[in-house]
Image 1 (tube, rainbow, N blue to C red):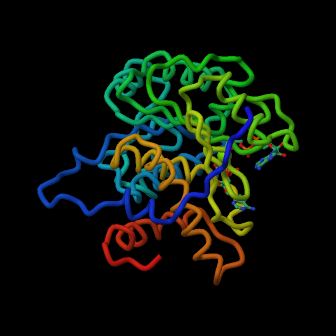
Image 2: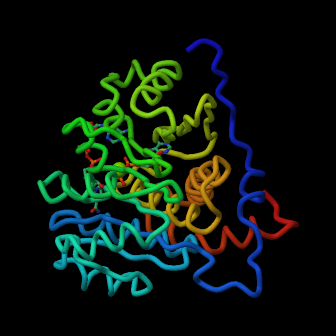
Amino acid sequence: MEGLVMEKIDKSILNQVIIPRNPESYKGNYGKVLIIAGSNHFGGAAILASSATVHSGAGLVTVATTPEKFTAINTKIPEAMTLDYHNKKELLTAILDNTVIAIGPGLGTSSIAKGLVKAVLNNTKTDQTVILDASALTIIAEEKIPLQTTAHIILTPHQGEWQRLSQLEIPEQTETNNFNSIQALNPDAVLVLKKHHSEIYYQDLTFQIEAGNAGMATGGMGDTLTGIMAGFIGQFGYSLATIQAALLIHSTIGDRLNQKHYVILPSNIIEKLPKYMAKYSSQDHES
Ligand SMILES: NC(=O)C1=CN([C@@H]2O[C@H](COP(=O)(O)OP(=O)(O)OC[C@H]3O[C@@H](n4cnc5c(N)ncnc54)[C@H](O)[C@@H]3O)[C@@H](O)[C@H]2O)[C@@H](O)CC1
Ligand SMILES: Nc1ncnc2c1ncn2[C@@H]1O[C@H](COP(=O)(O)OP(=O)(O)O)[C@@H](O)[C@H]1O
Ligand SMILES: [Mg+2]
């Protein structure tokens, strides 16, 4: 498409989205988030995604995973509840019950994982948000699963996953080609393309962040972004601004840590989330 202008996302979006909490509120006001993640090989992805969701302020977080990982999750992040994703009845109840569902980190591409992706796409509705990441994107590309749900859809591929989904080689992943590809997949879906200076494709608008650094090139960094995105949407509601703020705070914290740390661990970003959210929620914050 001609004439796209990729707008830079200003840090003021953080101040706009991360508002002070109502003193009369309770956990029920801050979103119910279901994270469908993890498998025997990739337990850490489920921990990082759910820990990021909890630390970004979601009211109630449930992790649907394989029971072998329950103990690790309950130990590392006791605030999150666990459920066995092999139990179809419990899983369906959780899909219907939660406002935000993030699926994919560490899920792998087994037949169980494929069934989970289909269950989410077939059972979610308009007032929900589905975040598709990592293995969920690989499954959708390999199985050519249509993005048919009426829920809001956010895809968070890295360039390799986007290549699988769009058939665009990385050098061909230009603004115009990316725009046309996400429109073809589902014109209502939002594409968050993760790279150095990640991009957002939202309807006919495109945005780019000017934050983020190579110290963030650490396994689990994208799983962490997925958790933040889920926590922010659960708490602040689905909107372009919320998506922008989630993407920006992840890399802004990464940049601040990079001033003194050569490499940044996803868990370092996670532990800083409450502090940075307090800073941006106060009216007199310094950027
Ligand atoms: N601690 C954990 O449990 C972790 C689990 N992980 C999970 O491992 C599974 C496989 O995901 P991966 O992303 O590692 O592997 P994938 O095989 O899905 O993607 C990596 C492939 O994409 C290519 N590629 C091109 N551009 C890339 C880019 N900008 N970033 C990354 N790869 C790029 C690579 O060359 C490679 O061929 C996912 O379920 C993921 O969530 C990873 O998140 C790492 C940490
Ligand atoms: N060189 C870089 N510059 C800026 N951001 C980066 C860089 N390398 C990685 N990142 C960020 O780290 C995250 C990596 O995501 P992803 O590859 O999905 O990680 P994982 O699947 O291991 O969790 C993305 O948010 C990406 O933008
Ligand atoms: Mg990833």
